[in-house]
Amino acid sequence: MKNLTPVEIGKKIKQLAKVDVYSDSRKQEIIIHRSLLTYILRDKLKMRWIAIALFYNSQGKTMDQANAMNSFKQYAGYKKKHKKLNKLEKLFTFKSDLIYDEINEIHYLKNKIVRLENKFTKNPLIQVIKKIPKERQEEAAERINLMIKSWEWK
Image (cartoon, rainbow, N blue to C red; front, side, top):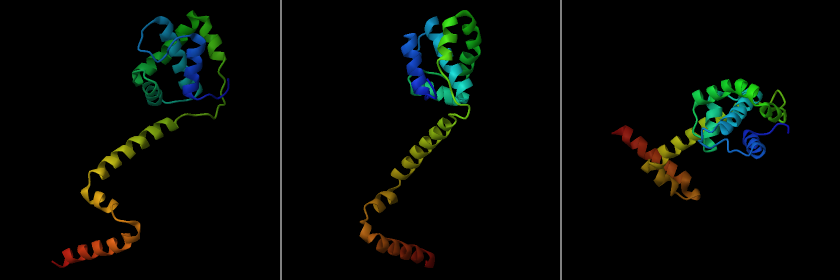
């Protein structure tokens, strides 16, 4: 399996291990496979800690950066104890230039869009301007500019 997305990797691990790595369960079987997923996301895909945490949260698993770091650190120990993890890990291969740092940027931009939409939907002037027909927009702009100039004269 080459160059899968984080979602596809998670699905494959869930399918092969027959455990839900996104559940909030603390069962050993789930924790070790979640650790494998975290290891792949960090080591193979070069995702940042915050991106890993955001990814898990987007899949329904509550996680922050500290949890992601801890899961990653624990993987080496789990791998020694559970030989099947090594086999699962080897099923995933990646190109070295494949990086998922864009997840941070996408998350930032989505939040910015939401903030801007909220800012503009609450502005009563924007609501009035939205009602102006396209063919009358030039006329409306001229009238608004004249109104602004009249305020400067007073």
